[in-house]
Image (cartoon, rainbow, N blue to C red; front, side, top):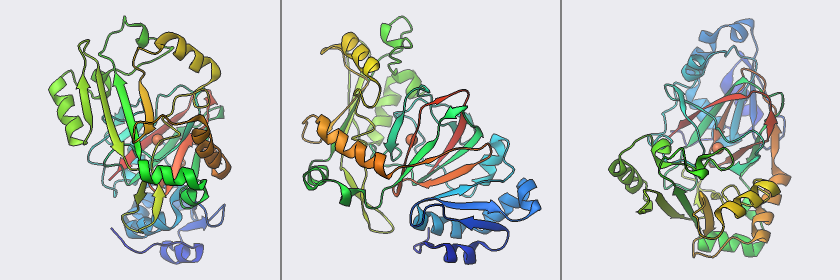
Length: 350
Ligand SMILES: [Fe+2]
């Protein structure tokens, strides 16, 4: 991996040459836009993959400088082509097993972006920042944009810590965050399996029926866990709330306090009330997030983080064929609610 960043449009133009046209819609903020500058690049997938192979180092440098890159106007119509385009990036070795989102593999290294219901706004987050090891980057490809909404929102994570209120920043830095997951054992007759709750089961999420296999996957990830008498599973990890970027040395916000909180702002008034009525105080809920010392996350703390992200976010409206590559620590992502069919596919890189 490279140490030097390409951080300005001039540097990027020099590095990427004449075959593409570059722009920066929001100066000093992700993403860098790359569009074809010739008919061949517009129509020939081989020209694009050849260009990708020939500029891999420079793409890595620009990813570090800009935090995200968008390719628009290139002829990507099939999953295979997306996979070939991104073939120069190492897949994330640990894959996605144990991740929070419900998603399945489509083909090779390519996965569905998420099965989170379309009416839910997925809050800004950095992928798997609740795990000891998380992807370095992820690529999203749009096969079909939604009818309305469905934008991917992104947020420049540089500067987030500095903009938080002092007391909250100190708490994030000093306490860290604890992520708790409770997965039931697969049972289609259990009320929690129904469409109102979609409580995750471990057989599905870990893609195995074998408890020992799940236990060793969790140990590998540094998670603590407990199997309950009814076959359900709880596991939790305590993680720092910030991270020093391994290449640039920047101190960054790196946690999912906002996106893993379950409250009326992250779901809806109705969904939160339904959840309270059904689960009450005794049934374990699918997720909990709290401070590393076990204290609950207060509403005003959640709202301070959420409001900061809302102020800083940029919404990216997809067109079919668009590809977005995100540096996972430097740029957060989320998804607006949508209507209609939406097909965005993802690859994660280590
Ligand atoms: Fe995500």
